[in-house]
Amino acid sequence: MPTEKSPEGPRGYAKGRRKREQIIESATAMFGEVGYNSASLREISARVGISHPGLLHHFPTKADLLAAVLQHRDEADNELLQADLEGGYDFFQALVRLVERNQQRPGIVELYSSLSAEATSPGHPAHEYFQNRYDMTITAMRTEIESRITAGEMPAATDPDSTARAVVALMDGLQIQWLLGRDAQGPRVDMAQVLLDHLRLVARIDMTVAVPAPASDAAPARA
Image 1 (cartoon, one colour):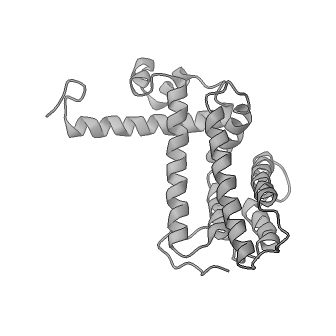
Image 2: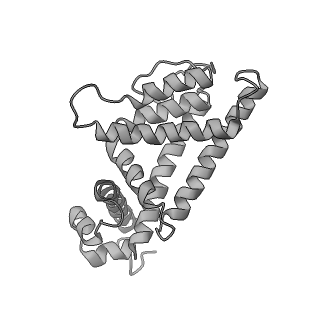
């Protein structure tokens, strides 16, 4: 039954959901462009074409909007990563494909590079989020490395924790170089290729860097 907040029933709900998605997309772009601290809710609402009170109806605070932006991007990336794993790619191959996709989404790279730097401050609303995100990423990578060591696919002397942290540091550093090189003369940094070259050395993976195919396409077996 329709309610006062949604006089058109399901149609009103769908319209509200679309507006919420538009707000998240605009906030994603703006947080990436100027950082969280410099972003203005009024500017975001203007970009979306709604009033400031209208935006606050969906997201009462800027911290609420930031949380929604981060959750939205993580859900999308996790779905694609899981689809690659289920399609036959191993962990590191799927990681390279994620970086390949990011090279087609400069706004996302800019967002995470900007926010992760800001969030080193303990008072930042995304501080705990990025702490947890790094912990989860390093834990997953360390588990994969330990599995490869056990299977004889990586040297027994490999330190799983330091190797995992080095890969994450490489990925973060490549994003900065890639962003800075977008308007520079000369060859641009190919994040996916550099990551792949490194993983070929430390994890013995092999694949061809290219624009990612749909997850439903045939995928190579684990190298």
